[in-house]
Amino acid sequence: MTRVALVQGASRGLGLAFVRALLDRTDVGRVAATCRDPAASEGLARLRAERGDALVVLRLDVRDEASIAAAAARVAEACGPRLHWLINCAGVLHEGPALRPEKRLGDVDAGKLRAVFEVNAFGPLLVAKHFAGLLRHDERAVLANLSARVGSIGDNRLGGWYAYRASKAALNMFTRNLAIELGRRAPNLICLALHPGTVDTELSRPFQGNVAAERLFDANQAAEQLLRVIDSCGPADTGRFLAWDGQPIPW
Ligand SMILES: NC(=O)c1ccc[n+]([C@@H]2O[C@H](COP(=O)([O-])OP(=O)(O)OC[C@H]3O[C@@H](n4cnc5c(N)ncnc54)[C@H](OP(=O)(O)O)[C@@H]3O)[C@@H](O)[C@H]2O)c1
Figure (tube, rainbow, N blue to C red):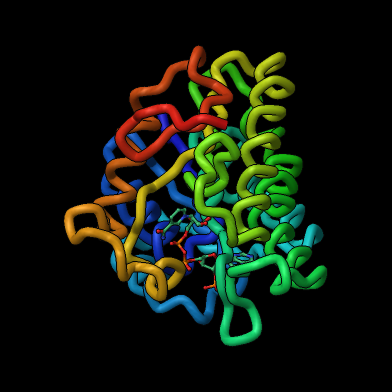
């Protein structure tokens, strides 16, 4: 049986590492990788050259709902009507000098809040909306949303990072809602919000100063760790917020 995985936000960083790890698995027959500009991802081009038809690369920009709908139709056509893993990776914390995480209330800006929420929270929810039909079947399937520990309200002791923290808190609520609604018709679908730890990618690079070397994960290691967490979960775990080591994180 060909089991199919989809990684959304796969151009680089953790998303690209998930694609690589999933292609190496014997229980995965096909991987669909989406990103907003396939021609610009050297990593995906390299994997495509190495792995051929096992990898399907598609355009999807989470801020463009029509592109999400088009990608869902294309995945059904290219990979069949069943998805077994959908991993939402796209996320933004900073982007050039214009978008930096807020240090204080005075840094808050409505346009920037909207931009971060669109990628980190609305994006994965709209992806779930358009791909739900492919996840609703009787086999085991996983919808994993890349969240972050700083999205935990209970664990927030430092403040700051208004947009990023709150967008991940919203994503956590969306994940819990999805677990409840989709679980009614797909009892073998497991919806998870996952914290990867601090991973050495462009997203964390400006903020790695205080991270101990043994706590800064390489992207490939982080993807393997999260796949182990995903593999260890069953239907009873749906709706949980878990860290890279399988430990629950308070909402
Ligand atoms: N790295 C960490 O320490 C860390 C910690 C906690 C949580 N996370 C979460 O883990 C996830 C992956 O992060 P990362 O570290 O791999 O970040 P990254 O290396 O900066 O990669 C971010 C990814 O998001 C994509 N993206 C941004 N805007 C997009 C859009 N509108 N549509 C589609 N894709 C878009 C980027 O695509 P382009 O190449 O097109 O820009 C890129 O593939 C994120 O959700 C992040 O919040 C990371």
